[in-house]
Figure 1 (cartoon, rainbow, N blue to C red):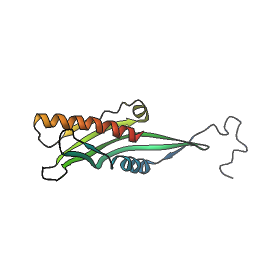
Figure 2 (figure 1 turned 60 degrees about the vertical axis):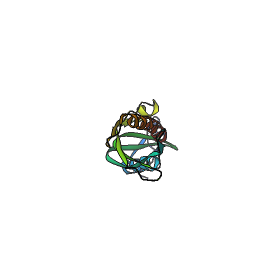
Figure 3 (figure 1 turned 45 degrees about the horizontal axis):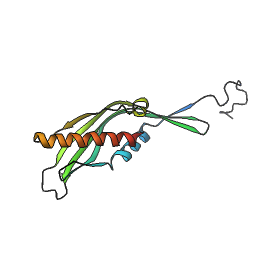
Figure 4 (figure 1 turned 90 degrees about the horizontal axis):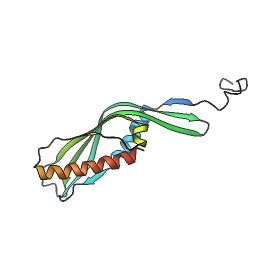
Length: 146
């Protein structure tokens, strides 16, 4: 058998990891975890929701050793969001969260700090409320990516 360890040295058997490149799987997994997220904006009728994930770079690997799997990620992407009011009478507010070089270590250490951009002009007081909601959204997004 081609994958047999019968003639392999004793140090070889079971002591290696098989690396499987799964960039498409990792991207789809991140998208499925982040797309359903919504965050209310305090003291307003707005709620921020994830619209799309663009500018995807990198991806990940699945390391397999016996029955153990480890997911290894190194990715960058732009999370596009929009906020509308319950009755949709107000203009939508749009923006992005830019994630650069996200790795397992950063996710484990809760150290992922995306660049936040609000593209719709807002009054200072309203902008502060959106920034608060985006900080909370970043935290929830990180929890979902772990």
